Image 1 (cartoon, helix red, strand yellow):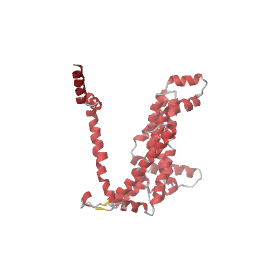
Image 2 (cartoon, helix red, strand yellow):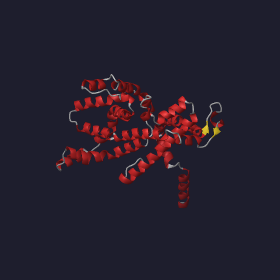
Image 3 (cartoon, helix red, strand yellow):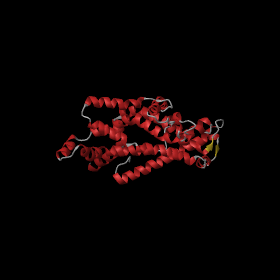
Image 4 (cartoon, one colour):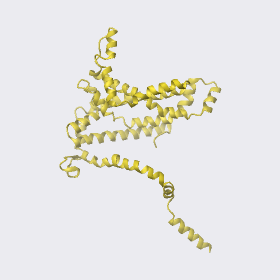
Amino acid sequence: MQSSGISTAKKVREHAPPAALKRVLSSWQLYVLLLPAVIYLGIFNYGPMYGLQIAFKEFRPSLGIWGSQWTGLKNFIRFVTFPDFWKMIRNTLAITVYQLATFPCAVILAILFNEMHSLKFKKVVQMVTYAPHFLSTVVLCSLVLLILAPEGPINNALVSMGLNQVEFMFRPKYFPGIYVWSGVWQSIGWSSIIYLAALSGVSPELIEAARIDGAGRMQVIWHVNIPAILPTIIITFILNTGGMLNVGFEKIFLLQNPLNLDASRVISTYVYEMGIGGAQFSYAAAIGLFNNLVNIILLLAVNTISRKVSEIGLW
């Protein structure tokens, strides 16, 4: 009888669904809610990857993707040997590294918000700093061009002080600063939300204990608040590093003109020139793929270094 019971239990275990399947079946409603997002990602994010093969072909719309001639690495070699290749890489890195250098601004703003005791004043300042985020890129660039125009308010102020006008938008050396700091003005308030949320999770007992031990406000910020939000800061930094070569096309294109082209011609605008302007779809796809591969390598490298140094990473 005992051996019969054991064999029956064994058969039940063999025919029982796996634990993972049990979890799915027990919460099937949640997976149904998740299904539209998965379908969206599959269609619009993973589906287009089918067309990456044109980077290795001489794509002709009349022949289709499969009918176009295979050229291997020809398009990649053409891009790397392009006379302005290193200039574009330099311009792209100059802007992205400049952006990364302003990364602490949102953290500092979040800490300042956290230290405000007047709730009414805090709400007003937050609203003022969040508002620019909701401006479209076209509106933002129009404001930048109007403010920095030869007859704009900044140049009028310089003339009133007896100084000469500065042609900000026509001198390449000013372009990275204009691009980066206008972006900081637009996004700093919105970017601070994630750090403010992390700061709200800092234990009040820990802060109170530090104050009882004689810690001042700056010491509490440095030894309690910053260590508490450090994982959030590192993960956000890693994600930003992973997109180093992905300088936004739209904003640069709107601020670009023939006189600042030496500093404003980046990889994304060159892809537009070749792909949309020149109908060289295979070449543009190869440049985009090259760009993404470099970003993936940077992401993996920074994440590995972060894991070794601070034991914090994306995985």
